[in-house]
Amino acid sequence: MRYLTALFAFCCFAGHAQSSGASEPLTVFVTGDRVSPPVLQALREAAESAFAPSGVKLSWLEGPPPATGVDGDLVILRLKGGCSNAGLVPAEPLTTEPRTLALTHIANHKIQPFADVFCDAVRRFIQPSLKSAPVRERDQMLGRALGRVAAHELYHILLHTTEHAHSGISRAQQTEPELLDPQAAFTPGDDQRLADSVSADSSSLDAAGR
Ligand SMILES: [Zn+2]
Image (cartoon, protein in one colour):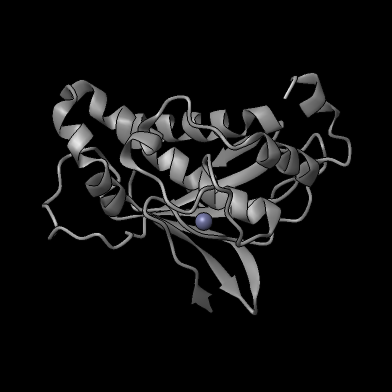
């Protein structure tokens, strides 16, 4: 197994999700290190918001792995590092090199439905904004950033692609403001491809006027 690399802000890919039925959400099984409820809630909301225009619905699982499986496709999202709150992290030496915030696993040249998100790297990446924000807002900011990173990886998984767009959430490199932008979105083209990935009928996207 090898890993695809990442972005300045997000990165890479994950898995092999098969096309879901139109009525079946993509189940995201969140595992790994502890995440506080406020951070996890903000993560979920950011990821759901990112996929809303495409009609891709997400369902969330935590705790013990489901013994009986799930309807539709399952993606494992592993959060690693300090994900429990938006406490500040020690600074790293300045670098112009892209930082890997997340990655998706590839095996036998196929994207796997398994992504890692590196919480400490994300916290460090958005630390300038965290420092200047009220403490009460920091967990939500971290969760929003983690949700955007997760959405980027889920994009790779859903579309079985290592390709990136030139703009939007699926761009390979992101800036800190982009990661925290409440209006961040996939491109309309990405929305259409995502819609097509979960349904042969893309009327939901047409109906949404996108
Ligand atoms: Zn990527």
